[in-house]
Amino acid sequence: MNLFDLAGNGGGNAEAPGTVCSRKACRTPAEWQLLWNNPKIHTPERRKIWLACGEHRSWLEDYLQTRGLWKETLALEAAASFDKTAPRDPSGRIG
Image (cartoon, rainbow, N blue to C red):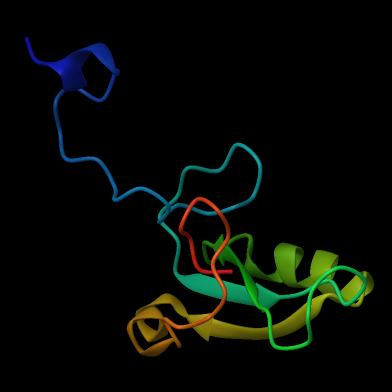
């Protein structure tokens, strides 16, 4: 038995941290990144990122658009070309 067996995944390879959909209770691998910012508390160039699976992309986009927070949606593969000099939160995540 190894530590991963105790986590309940049977010792299989787990997804990299942070690559699952941001929709509550969804553990599906993400395919999209939704860039947003709250103009009341963030500078205009700041971008926060939610990840979305194909099923929840439109729901998460609608949620952000309704509140005037959504900026753009990019394929997750585009994350490699995303500006890594963007402001980081205290945990070190981009956005």
